[in-house]
Length: 356
Image 1 (tube, rainbow, N blue to C red):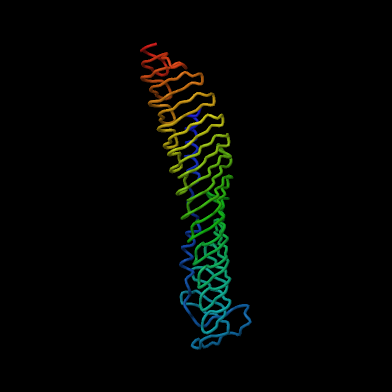
Image 2: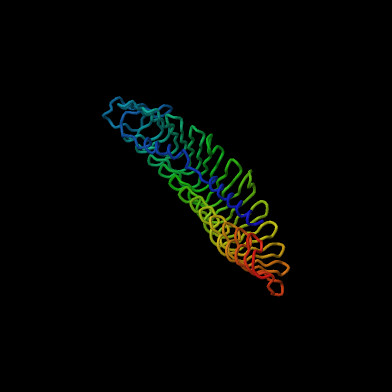
């Protein structure tokens, strides 16, 4: 019966809310590390480059090195081996940091520019384009945990189109493909869960926001689908939830639950049209049975509660009070021709006293 099914639907949505919530990627922490270690190095003379066609730089470090290759070891133990022009790192070179981090790639005017590979001491690695000492352009960032991002960067952050794949851990096998802004999912994107569930739609600040479609995978709600508005990773606004069993809800949502005006149609053609609150029928509404029976009145927690009218397919009609889906309180039962059959007090669908 609808009222029970509505309650089950509410449980389904609550669970879905838990499934959808996703913490931000572990790459965020690595990005903080790189933001520090990828600062431009101090301009220093006296550096050499392996595999360079340029001549060795002169031994005199007081003379600006240009069009030569050299090696320079910093007081803290860091080392640069590479090409020079105009007394600055220009061309190909290798920065090896005392911390164990290492950069191999191109330089321009003492900054990383062009193609390069930056490997952190913990094994995390970025391979891609640089501009003015920062990750800019296409690149691949691989975390030792197994997480991986392939896509566009701007000013050391994920910006533009990109794909993020999760490695071993709570989200192993999950994948996001879409737009990014300042290291967060923003714009259009597709998030595919390892369990087969999928979201396609809009993001803002790393959360589902705007129009989208969420499809459930294997499990108790396999094949169920929500199409509509999202806010902060939850169904909010206008949306349609279609169950694999044929049930369908069209209407308003808030915080992942049915709230406001809506229509819930069961697969057997029973239908409720009216108000919802916290996932259940609450307030004024009309429930029409496929058999032809119809109830119009008040609901509470998906049950007939309060004042209402129940009209039977044969024409009989009860007008009065309900409690937990049953006649309870003052009420009148009419015959199809409008004559009164019973009028008085009822308790749990039974007539207690009055006029028969």
